[in-house]
Length: 202
Image 1 (cartoon, rainbow, N blue to C red):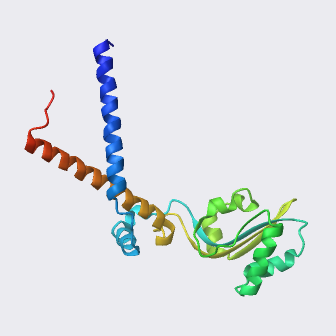
Image 2 (image 1 turned 120 degrees about the vertical axis):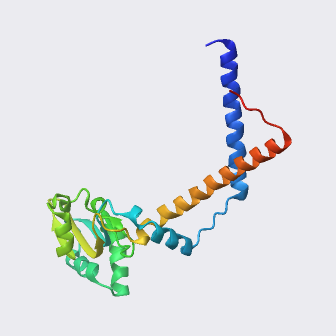
Image 3 (image 1 turned 135 degrees about the vertical axis):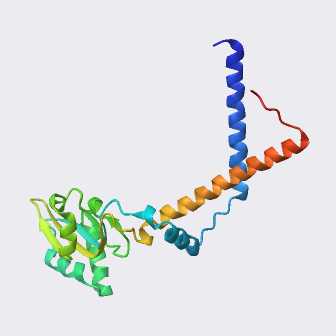
């Protein structure tokens, strides 16, 4: 590669950096970051086929506690409860004694991630397991594992909106970015053409 070629590549790189910074500032100044619930719902309904589940998901509660932890029988009762005071007791107990826990039963979770590193991982047929179980407990030599399933969706079904809404937000956000950049490029081209300020290189 000769000196002229090297200098040309350096100039191309500098130009690319200038264009990138210009686009980034344009996006920062003009991008509408507000995404409404209605927009998310509309995108979801229009693209249902794109949101087919690739994994089983659940809503529920999961607790992993040392086998010698106190009041394990009480914990099993609290896990099944919907009484606010008992749920507060459960949360307090988990904070003090649980090795791992999730009590946010209104949120969808990947089932495989929940049961990772537990005896539940060896379940031979997870779909059948989800169909037939709402409360399960087991243990190994070190821990007690408690799983309460409130709801589930299985692989190949359409994802619940709640499970994919952050993904949809990012898609809408990125589409807006692409549109802004495209419109900017078209505007620059039209103005340059109008004023005779560009050249075409072969």
